[in-house]
Image (cartoon, rainbow, N blue to C red; front, side, top):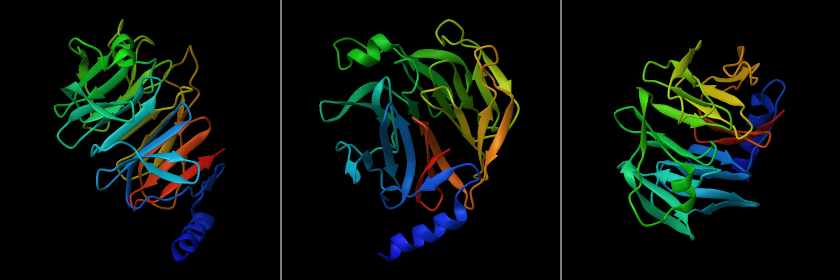
Length: 254
């Protein structure tokens, strides 16, 4: 088709040094993507949620969502009114609380930020058992973030001034403190293997290098050059999923 031809021409000139990118099945006007534990989920600009299954995107549940996430804590999402949902038994069920962005990539805990930039986390005993009787108690954190993502070792986040932070301790429940990392970004995503990628406010993508257990904040930012501004990224099992501002999705591997 004509669209496929355009995508292949675009790929020829756009893929990044050191990375090989292919165009997965496209869903018009992709807005946000998240990958975790082999699952890839996304939302489009009309608040539809999808999951990638072999030959294409399949509708995920019936609830309109603006942000969806997949990981050890399951599949979670939020809608345009900041209501929170978990995917259980074939559809999204409502969860107590209000958040505007959530992340399921940590050690089975669910984290997120609300519209006042306040940070919250839900313990794995609640995330895994939900829906269960009894209240859902979100644990508040020190600091203010606009975007928050966790991996197996650390959590990373950015604030409204595009400052970047990493959690001091691997257990975010024992130490809720943050260390600022040089650089500027509007979003940070931690892969399920601990890899860290950020997107700057002008749509550039960077990977954090030199992350070790003794240096959890890493050493440097290395740019992954793309020829168009990027809106959102997620990383899982060696795949960097990229959503461009124009709504096109790329699947990139090193």
